[in-house]
Structures are given as structure tokens and as C-alpha cells.
Image 1 (spheres, rainbow, N blue to C red):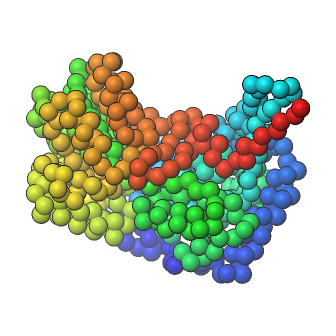
Image 2: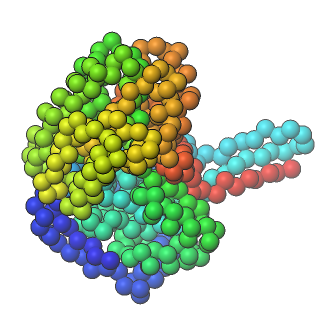
Image 3: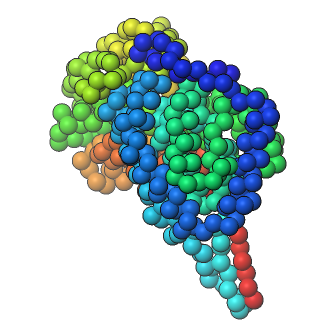
Length: 454
């Protein structure tokens, strides 16, 4: 397992980090367990909330330093990197503000008998987080924020290409006043992760990543009877049924596809357009995408940087080529220069084309023609994924009707890029299980203990 910062814009390996040894890993698990048995049990929710609030403040205070790190690590355009740091800070602030509310006793009305009954939420213990490279700070915030205010302690295994941001996050937790062991960064290998999940002191695992990684982790967790939360990506539909502002809708479509250089799990990836709007949408959408060129991510003007690595760009190129070989029409783009990839539009992707069942992680859009509302819903649901979705319509009744039929964990109507700290995030089908963010994100790794008093 190699942990290294390799700048995808230049191909230069900037810095390498030593993987953790087995003895060090054992010490890390012990420290997390000791912190749970000690600090977690003795601290109040108000004290933990104050520490989490300081974590959020330090993210904002160090925003430029933190942003520059992930520009180097995974090529995120610097303005988007700054935005991610700010969002992570807001998530920590949200959980600091609402910690007491989320952990309040929940009374139960008894059907018969005297006395009282409440559900009291408390920590489970040590948790393992396995995080991806595409949002190095945000992903950690939505896992660590709620769980540390609950009183769980964290072992955090970040992506191999994000070791510098991983170290910077751990330093923030220590600088904020968390005790040693409350949040521990581990540069662990895959075989070591299996041992961590199996360790009796570890009570749960949360992974954001690929289907393959999710299946492997879920299998290990299942064998060891551990709670698991999985977010495994998606191929989110963007359904356009009607609009009174086509240019505005097209801009929303472009924004939804190109967020994070197209490397967002809940980015719009399949654009399903009503028959009467299809030709005009395709023309305007393709033209608008063509205006966006992949550029130096350190520039404040950059809207599209390189993909996260040369390998990621090569894999995306292969996907596009296979889609065309299987009958898709390449309307625009498809070119690659190192890790930089052109904005690309594919049409005529049939259900028999493997591309119809794959996630394209980069600036590649598939556009589909729908005969009517029912056909649009059919196309939207014809995917193994079910993370997010987008629906544009001027008909309010249609909006509710179609939203109910979309097989996804999230539906956004007439808006994009509308995630929030207070909004639950997660999916169904092969996009995973469980929820993060909002009240629901603070309700996954807790002991919902019934206390019945006669």
C-alpha cells in the first residue's frame, strides 16, 4: 500500500508517507478504545459540541492551506477546494449547534401500564471510517462530526492519494483540544483494514467508495457482526419534462454534471429529456459544455481541472471508447491529455450498451430522449444505482408524482448543487445503505437504549 501525493496536473510525486506498521496499528486501536472508555464516558455532550465547533472554526481559519493541499492531491479547482473546506466547517458547526437536541431522550407513550419509557441515545464505541479522494474534507466531516459529538471515537483510513490532507485533518482535531485517541489517522493497507473491522473493540464501519470496495467491507463487517454504512456512488438522472427557461435549465444541467470536475457521486450523469425539448436541449447543452475547458486547477478561473489521476482519466477514456463501440454516438469530446479530459456528450446509449449500467466519473454526459413522463421514469430507474436525482418541470403535481416514482435516496426538483449540512445524504440499490448528514446522520452509530420504568 503506497500513500503518496501525486499532482494529477503535472504527474509529479510531491511527497510520500510511510504506511502504518502492525504494532502502530494496534497502538492506534488501543488509543481509540481508551479514549472511548475514558474521555467519551466522562465528557458531556456540551463539551464535545464545543470541541467540534472549534474543529469547524479551524477549517475556516486554515482554508487556504487546506485547499492548496487537495489541489495538489486530486486536482480540484482551487475555488471549489475552498468551497469544500467551508462546507466541512459548516457541517461541524451544524452538529455543534444541534448535538444536545439530537441526543435528547425520546419519550414513548405507553399503551397500557403505569410509569414511563424513553429511548436514550448513546455512543457505541470505536468506529472505522474509510474515505475516498474526491471530497477529502467534506467526506470526513459528515462522518466524524456527528459521531464525535455522540461520543464515538474514530479511526480514519483516508484514500491513498490523500495522505497530506489526512494528516492535516488529524492535526486540526488535536489542535481543537480532542484527546489523543478520539480521532486517529491511520495509513493502513487493505489487509490491515480487515483486522481493524474484525477487532472486538471496533463497533462499526462507514465507507464511501466503489461498489467493489463496499461489497468487500460489507462482507467482512457481516462476518464480524458489525454495523456498516455504505455510500457507493451513483449514475444520477437529470429529468427534464418542461421548462419556461431552457437556457437556465441547461446551465443547471452543466453545473450538475461538472461539479468537482465531474467526479461527484451525486452529480447528474444521465440527462433524460422529453421528446419535444430533446433537440433544443441537446444542442444548447453540448454547446455550453464545449465552452468549459480543463485548465490549471490552481487558477481562480478554473471550472474544470484534471481528473484525480492519470489512471482515472485512462479508465474514463476506455469507458467512452467501449460505449461508442457498443453503439453510442459521440456527439462531442472524448479527448484526453494526460489526466485532463474533455467535456463529452454521448447519445443513443441503449439498454444493451454496458455504458447504460456504469457510473462515468468525470465530465461525460449521456443524453436520452423520453417519449413521455412514464418513459422518463423508466429510463431514470433503469440503473443499478439509486443515490440522487434531479427533476425539472413547471407542473407542481407532476413534480410530486414523478418524485415519488424515482428509485433514489434523494430527489432535487428544479435546483442543483443544493446539498446542505441539515439534509440527509444516501441512496438505495447498489448506491449503498444508511444516511449521513442532518439528523439522520447522527442516528446511525448510536445505541438507542430503551429505559422502561414502572
